[in-house]
Structure formats: C-alpha cells, structure tokens
Length: 393
Image 1 (tube, one colour):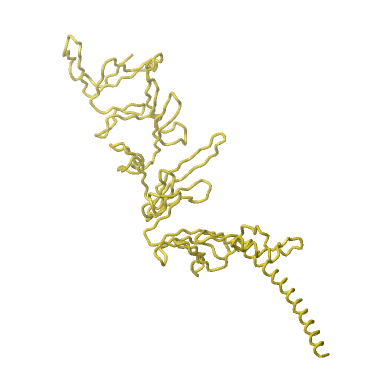
Image 2 (cartoon, rainbow, N blue to C red):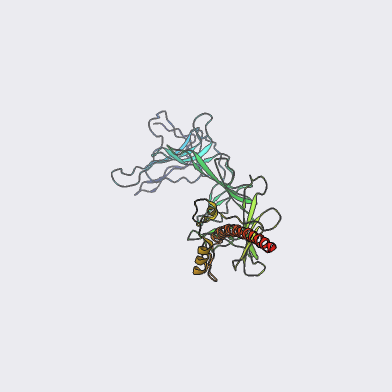
C-alpha cells in the first residue's frame, strides 16, 4: 500500500508518552490516502477515533469540500444507504435485527424519500417523501403526536388548513373486500363518510348543544339529555318536547309530530299532529280524556254474540219474554254484559253488544207491531159486527 503526502510534514514526529506509544502527527495541509487495491480498506483504525471537525463520506467528496458551520457529517454518493448490522449471537435470545437508513430510490424515476428499512424482515415501516410539509409528523415532549402541527394539544392532534381528515381503510384480503371510512371536520360540521358513495351517514353541527345525543351505560339513548331514563328519551327545557317522523316520498302530507306539552290543565298532554297546518288530530291528557278531531274506527274485538247473525233464518232467537226474563235476572242486557261502576270498559266490545241488542229490539218491535196490527184488524172486525147487530135491533 502506498501513501501520498501532498505536503511536507510541518513538524517532526513527537513522542508524547513513550510508555503508551502515543503519537501525534501534524500535517500542514492535510493528508490524502489512496491505493489501487480495492479489496482492502485504505484506512483501518482499531482503537477509538476522534474527528474534531466536519466529515464527508462518499465517493463524491472532494478535497475542497466546504461545510456549513453546523454540519458535522455529510454523506454524498449516488446511492446513499446507512446500514446497522447487529452481530449479536444468534444462539441466544439477544436481539439481532438489522436496519438501514435509505435515501431515495436507486432506480430511474424512483421515489424521492427518506426511509428506515427493516432489512431482516424486508420491510420499510417508515418513510418521509420529499416535499412533505413542515410539522407533517411531530412528537411533543409529553408524548402528544401532531400531524400538521408542531403544537399537539392531545394524544393525537391532526391539523389542516381547511378540512382535517382521517381515513380508516380495509385494503382487501381474501373474502374481505376493500372498504374505507372517513372522519372529517371543519368549522361547520363533523362527519363520518363511507366508501359506498352514500354521503355522510353521521354528522354533528358545530353549534349542536350539550347532550344532543348520549348513550348511557345501560344502553339507553338520550336526545337532549345525558341521563336517559328509558330506551329512548327526548328532553327539552321548554314546556313542550316533540319528535317528528317524515316520509319525503309521501305525495301530500309528509310528516307527523308526536308532542308532549303541559296542556291547558297544566298536568300534561300528548298530541298527535299531521303537519298540515290545522293543529293536532288527537289529544290525550293525564286524566285519560281523549279528543279526536275526526272519526274513530276500531278493528275489534269481533262481536262474540253474532251482531247481524240475528237476521239469519236459522238463528235461535229468544222470545221477548225469555229475553226480558234473562235481562232482569242478570241485571244487564244479555249481549252487552255487565258494566260495573268505575270499572274499565272495552268500548269496541260494548258497541258490538249494543248493536246486537239494538237489532234484537228492532226485531221484537217488528214482531210486536205485527201482532198489534193483527189485533187492531180483529178489533175493527168485531166493532163492525157489533155495529151491525145494534143496527138490526
């Protein structure tokens, strides 16, 4: 191996500590070490090495390399890689993974990047692309992570000039198709979107009040309250509260309001209102009084006593006398049944029984009317005979 000294030694060799063989060699303008043997290193130092100033490593370094004042190490090469090769014994349980810092792709038209590669696993878990903005990723002293900010205010703080967004993506594997969810927010709204193109199935306006939506520990849902006392509780600090059901495809009236209010008695009143501008169609107060602004049609129960069956030819109808006897014996109309004081009453069933008794009554009236007509005809004939006898005398 040959050594080329571009300048003469400025000072003679100084032996400063004979016992330790320490030597100091001073060169006036530096030293250039090179040879043509590329199989061995030109410089191999077995002891500790101290470099007191800036260092350039790489085949593009020049003797006149100029360093900025705050630069201690410069790597300059067409392909820059810094390897960390752990030679720990593989026989034990010592960690021995190898790592590498990679600067840019080596292929033409490759990616401009700074990466940390796990060379043992063959992965690149961390990459920063060229042109990434300032504070793209920032870890504060307290462990807070900032993305787009150097002043993270929470465990994860994402900042952007207009619409900070998070994306949760399933890239697809086997039977699991590609899919993603988007979480985003700005000065107007926070929303969750999906990949189906269905817009935003969930959104919160920036002026939404406290407890607009609350899910309690027992699964109860509160709208306007953070302590719902039922599976669904809608609360308002006004004297009334309501919810609306809307069917936008309905041709005329599209909404109905279910309202609870203090009512005219101040004891509470529920109202059912088709939103058509004419007020509620039904009102029910705390005393159980109901007001309907229309007709009431019920679907049952069916008339157990037959109702219109009394007009059938094979219907076994009691005589007026037997019907009356049964009525007086039981103290109520047979088809209607008992109606006790202050007891609940099935209006639909009662109405069916009343209809049956009314039909019985009309049949009895018709029978009695026929009997009366026959009696009147008989009386008329008897009067005619009596008049004839009196005239003969």
